[in-house]
Amino acid sequence: MYNKFKETKLDKVTFARISKREIGLNQSVIVEKLRRRLIALQLMVMLKLEEWKKSRIFQALNDERGDVPGWVLVVLMTTGLVTAIWTIAAPRLSAILRNSLDAMNGIR
Image 1 (cartoon, one colour):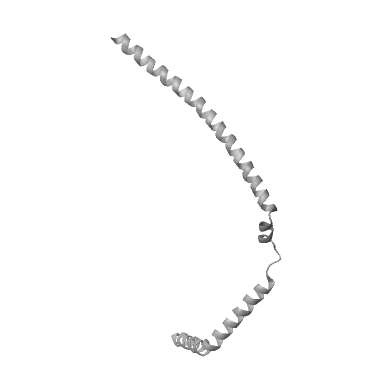
Image 2 (cartoon, rainbow, N blue to C red; image 1 turned 90 degrees about the vertical axis):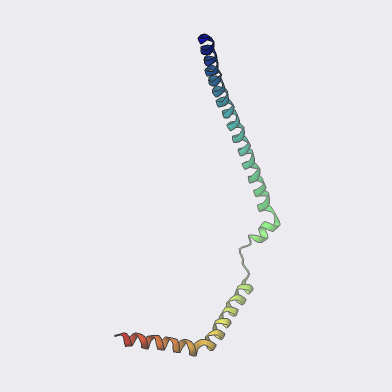
């Protein structure tokens, strides 16, 4: 019975070694296949990106001339808002600043 147990144990160890070796080989094959698929995917994405860059939509979105009338309008509206708020709030802001400076002078 001892010999049978020893043989069974030996068979399990041998099986484990073979399995690990086969798994290692299978892993390297799987890794190689994945690497090739990733390279193919990368090339496909690069080709699609090049097609996209040639499209009219991309060229229109990538136009760097800008929208000058739009920017002028934004600057004028911002200036108008700041001026309107400043004229309304100037007396109150001046009073707040004067009171805080007077309070600081009183600390000395």
